[in-house]
Amino acid sequence: MTNESIGSLFAAAVIPGLILAGMFCIYVAIIAGKDKNIQRSPRASFNEILEATKGASGGLVTIVIIMAGSTPVFLPQRNPELLPQSTVSFSAVSSTARFHGRG
Image 1 (cartoon, rainbow, N blue to C red):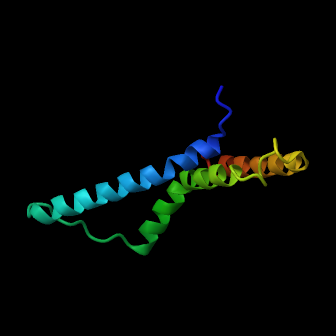
Image 2: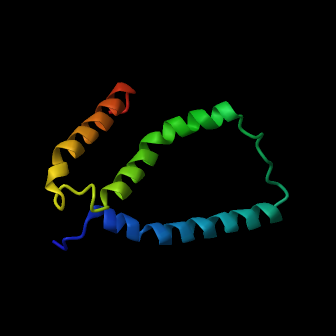
């Protein structure tokens, strides 16, 4: 079709996504500062934060894999001698996800 890699398309969306996320944070801070009826929840403990990070690790690792895969070193199409290594890496990630009940 357009011969654009998924990693390049993903990377092109990072800056606009960060800008939108920053604008949303500013909006929430302004609204929360004006509305006196909004009550704060108690701060999460370190263990709760760690558990939430473990739960989100699949999505976070996916972003890293896509961004690393867009570099010429990891692309098997551009570097055919790395094809067996990239297949083994994907198998290891896939089997780990199944082991933890996510696959």
